[in-house]
Length: 280
Ligand code: SF4
Image (cartoon, protein in one colour):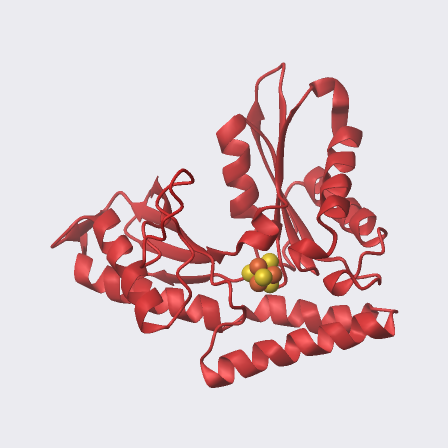
């Protein structure tokens, strides 16, 4: 069994929170640069320039890419030959989020309940998705999620009769309804199938896939390409000022589903498509 100390997990998670909020992943930065090459609108190109410059300044000065440093969504893949020693995994991750948001001077955006709306004061608890995996590695990903794009996301239990045309309609309608509020250019995670909760989760996980990596299933990859074209044809453009580049990528994930169901989740991610990972 590989042993990983809870103390080390805490330190790594704290570092991941800060790194994710300060440094845009290289594939997102490359996609913004490529978008600038394709954008036909001069105001759109100007906006893309500002976003690229903003990311560079954030990294250089060690400050957040955006003031909304989000709630901390954490994915943990725990190998069945890994033992966490000196504490529990959930506690170690929660403490890491607390320390990271404090040390990095990141905005605390979590309220303890929608009923009382009192800020928890330290951005904990995180939204933790832990999954068992084969082998002896432990991988943790921190993906801070701001409210602007999350609020504009949607889940709909469609009927199989709605078909793929219905799915396309829902994705485009979601992006159009979001307009500038989701801070485009977007990364769009689409969960197709599973059940109510699984399709939301795979839509979120889809946001973590590198933007140049297409789905291994040719049918899903073709859907990703078509959805990207449809979304970019809306003309919403960077930050909603108009233009060709409304999204940088559409990543689709699929799961088996009930014969009578077609769950679809559309998780919108703004241009601050933040995530950072560490693997033991
Ligand atoms: S949607 Fe993204 S870029 Fe816009 S305010 Fe929220 S975190 Fe920042």
